[in-house]
Image (cartoon, rainbow, N blue to C red):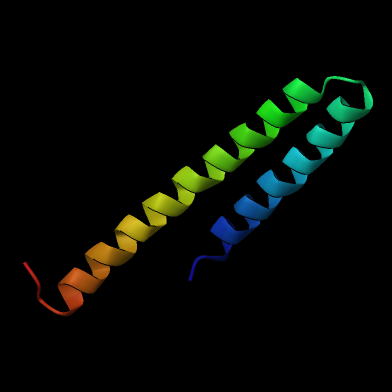
Length: 65
């Protein structure tokens, strides 16, 4: 398994958490929630892409068409 994708997801999570904390402490809770949602969407797109690769690999292993 690729370890770099795990580090990318963890990095996005840490960056999103810090950004959320900073924005929330400044009183901009709406923007903090939007930043968190953007981080979640970015990670979700990465995971969906990985799942597509996994299904394609399973399809080739079992010779499904």
